[in-house]
Image 1: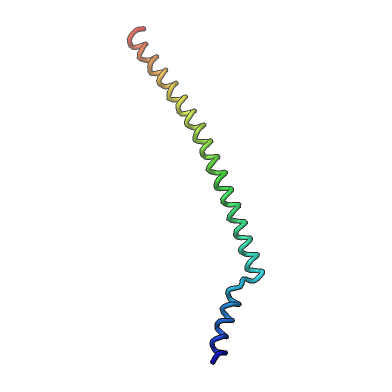
Image 2 (image 1 turned 135 degrees about the horizontal axis):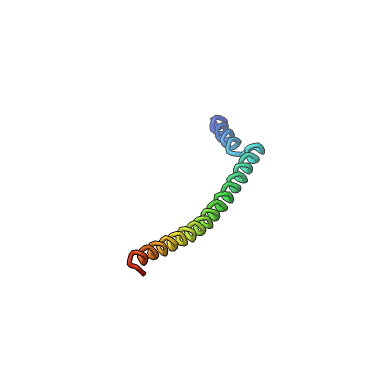
Length: 79
């Protein structure tokens, strides 16, 4: 009777232990996830930098258009 109780317990113990192949697979997946995290961080940083450049360009373009609009108004008023 004790043997029937020990067999499933031993089987579960061995099943819970990771093989070297499984450990290598987990390490590889962890390394891949780390690389993807780094790439995501770099992409976010690049996007923020691009957004700053785009914002500056947009503001400059808006200022130029406002200056042009003021120039047109001045011509309309005869100045």
